[in-house]
Amino acid sequence: MSYLLIGNISALICDDCIEPLAKGRLRIYLPEDAYPADTSGLAKFNHLIQLTPTQVARKEHRLLTETVLDERGDFRLSWEQLHLFTEPLELDLCLEQIPGRASGKNSVTQYHLSKLVPHWKRTKDKYLAAFAYVIPSEHWNLIRGSYDTWVISGTVRHFETMAGQPQLKVEIYNAQNSRLLGTTHTNGQGRYKLQFGVEDMSAGALPVKHGQHHTGPDVYFKIYRNNQLLWEEDAQTATCPERRAIAPCTLLNIVIKPATATKATRQLAHWLGGWSAVTRQRRRHSDDFQLLAPF
Image 1 (cartoon, rainbow, N blue to C red):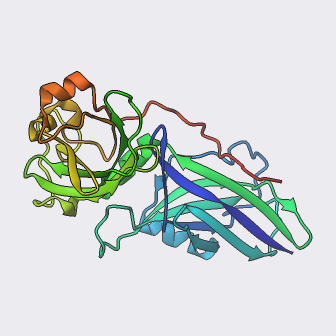
Image 2: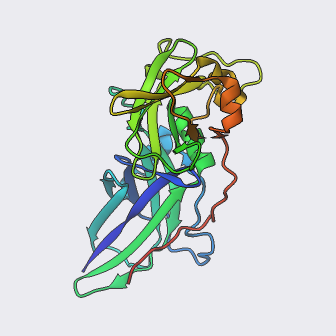
Image 3: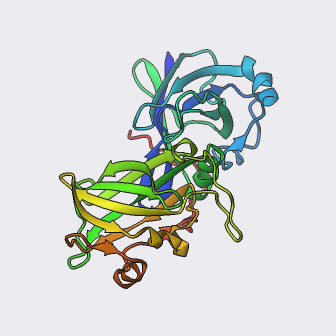
């Protein structure tokens, strides 16, 4: 008999936008001690406790198996039956290639994820179990910030119908130097997601201004249809509080009023109510893993 553990690990950018942890590495360790008599503390999410290199080295001999998450954050882990299937497993997550991080950065950070006893289902030739977990946005915000990366998501809507605008090109600029930070496109519902890192800003880092808690750029947008400028904001829009020093995980919704050669000034942007920012998510998630075994 063998074991097969499948599932998914993703992170919340905002309440309605999830980012898969593509290319993250999931490590499974055998328990350090004998099976505990009290299992009430198992299957609890501990908000990703960062491990030191010494802590990682001390548990290396207990490593059972590991795998890399695919582009959707999915994973499959299998191993032969060497231990009782009732033993708890220790799960760690290793991160290196955060979206928006420049290539060539090779430092890896390992986080302790959880200890749990999977709900194994016995099939003809194996034990099968599954679980999925979504990292709360407030914790993902801190982790992304430690890697000097940003992700902005939102919806582009028309000011009259408030309908999402599909297939538009979205450009975001750093207001301090008018440098393009990144380009993306809206999907069929008008949603967009854009990622960039500190290397995309000319100075490589930004000073923290008085009263600010993040070192992100001040931003403004330009919107295109078929590479033709449809709507652009004045750089002064970035001086508004919601656009200054954006957090690593930020929600910015945009309402556009297409007009030839017309810019959205700060006053007009206020009138339209065309953007909003969420720098800290209020949504709370259960500390328990969601065990999603479809059997």
